[in-house]
Image (cartoon, rainbow, N blue to C red; front, side, top):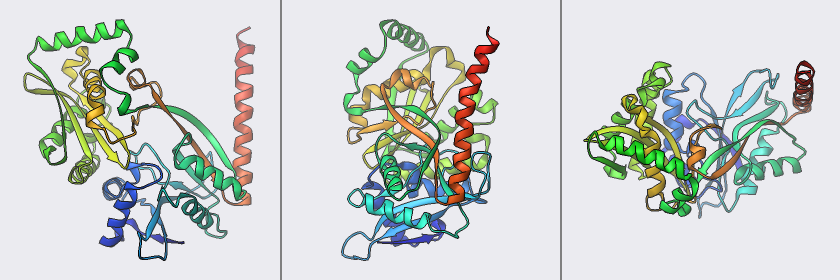
Amino acid sequence: MQVRVADPAQLDSATLAEWARLEERSFEANVYLSPHFVLPAIRHLDPSHPPFMLLAERADRSRERLCGVGLFRKEGPTWRFPLPHLSAYRSRHSYLTGILADRDLAPRVVDGFLGYLCQQGLGWHGVEFGDLAIDSGIGPLLLARAQMRGVPWYEYSRCQRAALKPAEAGENYLEQQLSAGRRKDLRRRERRLSEQGPVEWQAAHGTDLSNEHIERFLALEHTGWKGNYGTSLRSQSADAAFFRELIRRMARAGRAVITELRVADEVIASTSNLVSGNAAFAFKLGWHADYKKMAPGIINEIELVRHAPTLFGDCEYIDSGSLPGSFMEELWAGRRTLAFGALATTTLGRRALGAFNWLHRLRRTLVPARRRECSK
């Protein structure tokens, strides 16, 4: 197996097609490493700091040549990692890192990438991974193979993220997941919505997903606090352009889903969702600020849970992409464990990360003790 460096923006059509096929059979689903996501992200979000690409290829041309893809950026020293290092590519709208690896060749792909990344004299001393799933998929394999090579993992932090198994979702799931009081409150809010007119929920995907769905979503996501704080997609023309290209590309591949909650023919809530391999990824959501008291965003998500067994029937799970403490934790019972940390690939890198790790542990020990002292 050969590992080579490439520029993702300069790949030929044959390699791009192989990349898309690899995504579908990857050991771990990751839409944020899809060519349909990465190329628009580089073009619109990161033109001044693009990643380089590692391609793992086998010599046997009778089968799929491409069996691994990794994207990395060169980073300068930071307070966590005070030496030049790499970071697994993560745009400002990416919520998972890792690599794509053929499910039948994943250990060999990981070994090939580690062999390249651990070469001396390339100018970096380690590789950071943010939002790396470590309870299943490529994360545990990557860390185990790194340990076998004597490459230590230094973890900065970890968290849990809400997830949903479509096969378990539906009406009975909602009754078990939500308390009687919460269900009563939501029914009351739905009744208030219905006083404004007929309430309908729809999901558009494939060729049914139009530019109108995209523009309605962008308009809704821009209302309320996101627009006020300048964090909505429409707040920056580059972010809006990225989203339009992403959804159009995914829709053409039959892998984008936009849900809408309507009242009297007015769309008041919308979500965008992406499918990759055997998983789906909740991406962005928005709702009309004028209807905030009726919780249209939550009602829209409840309808998604209700219809998930048919809408995402081929998916093993849906990754919420949400932060800890999100309202999604109330609706989705599943959890994924994510870690932020770094592999030290040189002796100097191990010393730097080891020192940071020691100081971090010391701080966690001393700060609670100081708080106890102050509370006496």
